[in-house]
Image 1 (tube, rainbow, N blue to C red):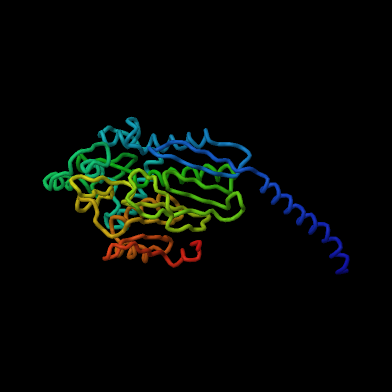
Image 2: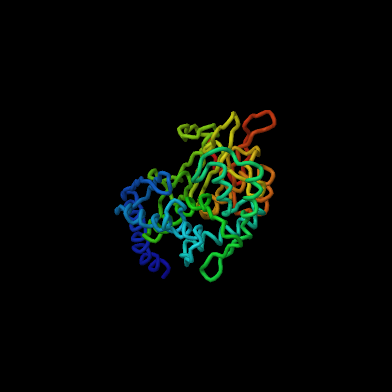
Amino acid sequence: MKNKRLIWQIPFLLLLIFGSIYVIRQQQNTPYQRDEGFIFGTIYHITYQSDVNYQKEIEAELQKVDNSLSPFNKTSVISRINRNEDVKVDNMFAEVFQLAEKISKETEGAFDITVAPMVNAWGFGFKTGNPPTQQTVDSLRAIVGFQKVTLKEEHVKKQNPQIMLDCSAIAKGYGSDIVARFLKKKGIQNFMVEIGGEIVVNGNNDKQVPWRVGINKPTDDSLNTNQELQDVINVTDIAMATSGNYRNFYYKNGKKYAHTIDPKTGYPVQHNILSATVLAKNCATADAYATSFMVMGLDGARKVLEKHPELDAYLIYSDEQGNNRIWYSPELKKKILK
């Protein structure tokens, strides 16, 4: 009786085996699309395994993000809020605002989307010019602080009409998330989305192995021409974002001014972290924490990481002798390619 059952089971097992082989071969034969373009003032690269090219649809999704969160788009939701127009926010703005508020609280204000006036005063936003005076910085501190703005009934409420919002430290990561969501909705399992260095990966690359992502070695490279790598890591099903002073700065009167502004002091940070790379479940979160860690410094970043085991970080910092040192989360050790 048992032998008869086994005989009947054999065809089904063979069908399952050959079916699996067919699916695997079909997947291996499916090409990888490689799209490139310009969005949010930077270049995007998107690689995904699909018979269909979705670049037009992807750019339409990115344009939605731009229409919501770009301060350089005069008709965007955030631009209208900054002009104190009575505007009902869209779902994208609400999602980013609520996440930003959450991370601001968890980093004790190191991440703050109201920092725009300070950024502009230091010449990294819409303006360029001389570094602000102490008096200017003090006046700006009065209108900076995430607690001074709230979202109620789909409208932003400001304590002071001079408050400006700036989501540049989270928007690129969020844009990568939006593209990743789109690709998943299309049933695409293997992809890498990269917008200005903010990355989401899923599945495997075209060699059927996890994606390999490089971490740049921090150098004074305002033109972003130096691509020397500090390390390469194996990653899949994760998001990753990097923030570093070496990517955006200017010199004036022999002094270096970095793009990371401390919302509490109103001055560019002078901490020892040169580069902060954060891995998280979504890229908007990774993006915001990477910026936060640049503000908080090495000790502050490690304290936050202790409270958030779902985050991993790779931090490059300068020691007392000016030498570059590395600290990374224990979970990353097995992902770093030697």
